[in-house]
Image (tube, rainbow, N blue to C red; front, side, top):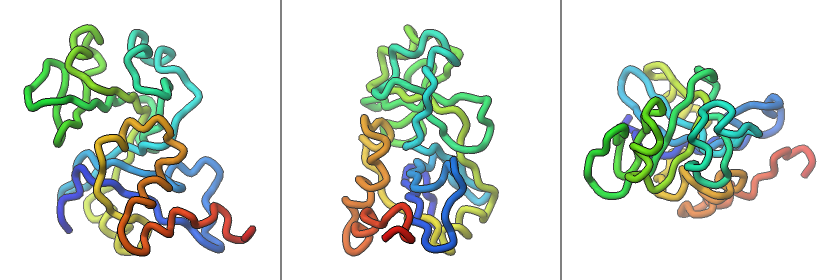
Length: 189
């Protein structure tokens, strides 16, 4: 399978008896793949805002995060860790920022915000991340659990994360766009 770094994984809707458990972080999720190779993959769920302020976990960062100004759940792995995803315009390297692909990078959250924020166009803080071992993600894609689509710059920092799943699907070509209207619980249809 091709390298999926920088692409989106959009969770396929579950039908019938496959209803998700309450709090399933992957139900109707949109995951930005940060790294993918033969050893596995990891990414961040972009559309799971939490009711926690960033300052409760990382004092000094709250005023710098994009709207909505809250902590996001990046996935089920290492929920006690935080990752700062940033949009960095231009091609220059910046102190405290590790560019991953395009204008997307990770910020060193141990660095003082005053040092890194002048170079940043947008910031979002995530608790935890999504991770797959070698071959695991590829198997999930083959089983139809994920649609793999191109990311747009605005996806990672959307002001309306609850709409992201449907928004990403609606912009797809062909019949994939119709999946956006699939009901959350088809048994009620």
